[in-house]
Image 1 (cartoon, rainbow, N blue to C red):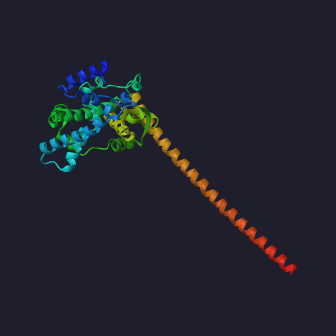
Image 2 (tube, rainbow, N blue to C red):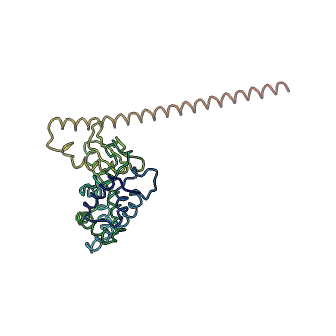
Image 3 (cartoon, rainbow, N blue to C red):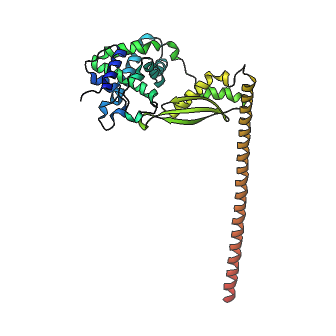
Length: 304
C-alpha cells in the first residue's frame, strides 16, 4: 500500500531524529503509528506489537548496563535503577526531548482532542522504536539508541530506597491534623490508552495535580508534586493569606474529623436503641404467645 504524504513526512522526521535510515521503513512507520490511526486494520500496522517487544529489549539493555556499571550493587538497587529508567514518566520525557510528539501518526479519533493520551503515546513509541531498531539493524542499533538517549540518566542515586510520596505527604500534613485526600478529576484518552489525572485535597483546599497511566500512579505523582511545593502550600515563610489557608484547612480537617466521629457515635447509639427495642418486642411477643397457649390449654381442659 502506497504511503500518504503525512506518513512519508513523519518517517523522514523520525529518521532525522534517530539519525538512521531504515532499510525496512514499514517497521519505523508501525513504530510511530498510534492505534487510533489503524482502526479496522491489523494490529501489526500500529506500535502495539512493537511496544511489547521493545519493552523486553529495553529492559535487557538497561539491566545489562546497570549490572556492569555498578558491580557492588545488590539486586534490589539494580532493580530500582531499571524500574526508574524504564518508567512511563522517564520514557515519555526522553521521547518528548527527541521531538517524538511531532512524528507520531494519530488517527481521526484523536483529532481535536489535544492528543489526550500523548504522555503514554510517547512512552509507547519510544519502546516501539527500540524494537524497530532491533529488527532493522540488530541489537547494536537498539543499544546505540538507548545508550545515547536514556542511559545518560542512569546514576547510583536511582538505587536508593524510594520514599512513598503519599505516605510522606500524609505524615507531614498530619502534624497539623490534616489528612490528604485524592480525587480523580479527569480521564483522558481512549479506553486502550488511558491517562488519569488526580488532585490532592487538604479538606476542601485543592493542592497539586498528577497524571499517570493508572489511578494509583496519578495519585502518587500528585502527592510528589505537592511535596515539591509544600512551602508554597503549607511551609514556612508564607504570606498572611497563605497561612490563613493553611489554618483554615487544618480547622476544617479537625471539624470534619469531629463531625465524622459524632455521626458514628450517633449511628451506634441509634443502632443500640433499635436492638434494645427489638429484643423488648420479641420478649413481649413471646409472652403473648405463652399467654395464648395457656388460654388454649385451659379451654381444651374445660371442654374435656
